[in-house]
Image (tube, rainbow, N blue to C red; front, side, top):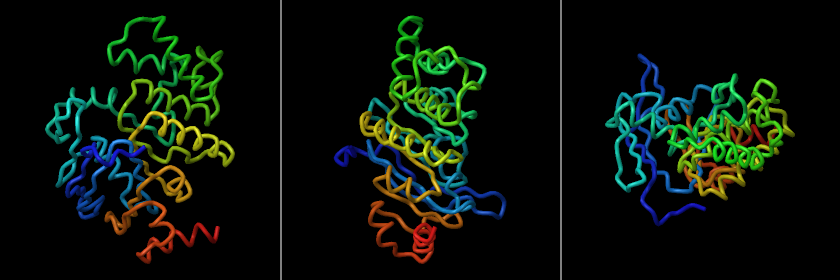
Length: 261
């Protein structure tokens, strides 16, 4: 549930990225509250992936800042963190769910090992406890616990994505970045995965920045939405308001294309 009374968890201030003369994104501003799901939508090349990579510290901006409220309450500019501090943040307080689960998993490591590695990254060294926690998370993401020693190479695409989610959430992060989490999956698999994601986000009170081209996914999962075109945020607001009553011609076109499909 969105906690609107709390200080923002993540703030983008005048965020801009250029690739030579091409705009990746320009002057993006927003604040993300704890427990809030923000969808970033737009066509390919709109700048949504660039923005996601800036927010998650994978790209450095040409201008602007990304500020994050740490667990001790202090808000820090990500650019001021050391590389070691950013890595620790990424494996503890943050999660990142890739569209292709192979980019977020160790494919040569067992399912249990993939989850356990994240726990070891925060200092847990008790093998029995790690394995039991991994087993519990496999069950939570609807993977048969008898598959704990199987490798992701033996899993279907939907199972890999669920395993990637378990790997990310086992350390109880406060913020998760999701890049087209249901992209490339069959429709029936997408529906099951979306139900799982929605339930976990609500149960754990996660803040999420979600990149998707699928407005149905945005409507199901997000509280607010940013619509991007040519690197600019052209419309923003509560998800239902933007999708039911879009003000910009580009947003209207996106919505009408879904209705016509």
